[in-house]
Image 1 (cartoon, protein in one colour):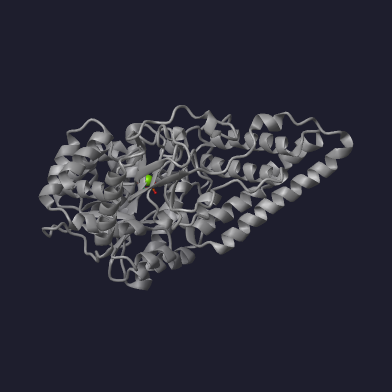
Image 2 (cartoon, rainbow, N blue to C red):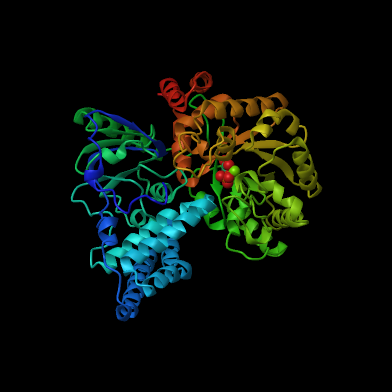
Length: 573
Ligand code: PEP
Ligand code: MG
């Protein structure tokens, strides 16, 4: 999306509607199949109408500025109220949007324009556009906030214009929500009994839409090309496993697809672990967590342990480095939640889309290719050592000794230095394989460490030279890309040759079908968001190791992500 994206995209803007049976391809985010009529979010008056409003006379400007302040406050208060009534990720997303609605920088930019004679609605558009440009240039997490900013803009304009809040209409029958992009405030308030699936033209697998869809368990596909031409009330079949939206499908075929998916979900719900194929080949199914609370809720699932504890996520809001004691207490919570079970702690993966204030990141043109992950240790003497000391203390306090791995390893030397520091503290060292150079030299890295964990999110980003945050490039960062899977295969072979475990902890492990392919490639563990654990374990329990091998062989012979998916589907269903 560019900063010049219009405020509205009215149905009349759309080209001809696709023919019945057209299958639109996107990126699958949440598995499940649903069929229903389309609803689309409400629209505001076109930007052109706002541009036509005359300049303000001098004496009217203070009142207009006051009207703007009131409207912005009303919007922020409503968002905060909704945050208070929501739970989990939905509540956090709404609270973050409310905070952004009251951000002094954009409010002041709008006030300045009003005081210079611009009518409030037009000033809101111009002020938000300035920040959209800025956030887009900054990229990463900041670029992800662009959708939030536009949402705030639309809400404030609706308030100023005396219109109902823009957003998702309340349907009378269970419906499928299609949109260009969904504002967090829209998705967070969804009633899953009435909105049964989501699909968007924009958005990536890590967008807010995706996060909320996962929490609500709504089948979801993002980055769907051609979706804008599908109008309200059209019947569509959303397949969150294949990543497709079928326009006006045969109703009987569509209903059968929904019933089949429901049956598969029921089977999945009955799965209690441990992870193994139907013929008993063990593959540990683990959970990814970011703090003690997440670990405790992961403990409620059949997850056999923690395959990735993203420690940097504990400290995103911290200005100063937490003390060793404080860190030890936080890590200890996760170790305690999985007492007697495997826990893999990752050292700080700061930088790029996850900057930490206390890591002193340099200004960089390309932060994803800059000083991030293990590279921050170089410029921050003692930071890694103190974290390892804290992990060792947490191990002592809880009696659960974790495995410890470093992010963003690119060379065998980095692995060697890291491993020495971890062993010094009596812990088990490993590294993440997220950079193609590390996959290519996995055998030499394994001379120093005891295990590998493949981060397919970054491995896809760096293999395909495509920003994982970019919605436009979501088909390139798809972990089904055969080039990414070839590097996974290479890494797994290196582990097998020396009898050391190789797991996968990127989003690839959360996709039940791909998880079976990974098992066929030989990975020894799969670590995914807690919500994905049951689906992954259940699918694995329904296929044989032979089927997994066949699927793995088949995907390695394909030349596109779509072909890889189709080949795996043929071998595994
Ligand atoms: C990955 O890159 O796949 C990974 C698990 O790390 P993160 O998503 O935290 O970068
Ligand atoms: Mg990563």
